Image (tube, rainbow over all chains, first blue to last red; front, side):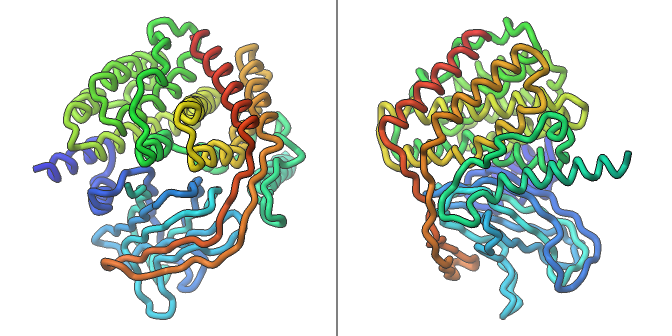
Length: 135
Length: 304
């Protein structure tokens, strides 16, 4: 019942995929921001194409959730870089080829970070990246 | 003409980049020497750069979450209760108050103070309608969610999303000055909340969070800078921001290096950052920031 109400509420103001992705983040997660990512076919091993910035704060545990629409050809993944352009995390493991649908990040350095999203293999796709904090 | 525009855009982007990367080559964060983008250039900052700045402001929800983590009890004394939504004569007043009340709404929502949040929602509605952006708030849904405490996440989403939509709409419709005011209002009220709580409940984590605001203060100043000469209200606001900046000048933020550590857990990945930021701020510096923040915030709220 509560889940249904949640989906309806999110659906009223935005597209349902955002609402669904926020719910997927789990009951211990508090919504902060979302990024709607829609990309066409790109280079297979190129840099992630969708970029945004946000501040992340020390002593906070964040959850980055990635959701795809059903017709996406690739899976949405995230690279997080700090303000020195150092990769702090990636939801795509290049060694195993595995893509994680969520990453919890224990932030110990406050600053402005760059979030870079793309779909695996540079495929076309549509998805949502949600940033929450964990209580 | 086109070449000139490209050059201006390049200069503006370079300056934004210079601000962002100020900590790169040293282990300390310092304000860039060029404190703000020159007026003409700043007005031409790309929409993307401005959107980034607006996203970089700490969400009041994050500050409220920190206060809850520190077991700080809720207090209505921190709220901007003297803001009268019916008595905001100018668009400047309305937009700034909209930001201030937005931060209060985040604080109330996190503490699930539904009665008060409904009153604030009603004020937000009046202000939003006064700025002709009321269409972005679904007040009935927000009211219902406020009363239904089990839907906190939906409430947060709808509130934040409404503010984001207003921000975007204003920027896209040549009313970027109002968007800047709203963002500055949110930040100022969040800063006021954090500093007032720190006075009553001193805690090193909260103290650090206040000190770390130095990282984004320059962005706020840059956001306001194209409008500083617009009218006397903006002129005062820009001076206020500079006053706050002065109090932050000697605060040091240093960094220690480290590599992130990852482990797989419950099908996801948990990454712990071992690189750290450290704030060096004396109690006297904190007191000065608290005082300047309170003076400015009260002046703006009372003027409202």
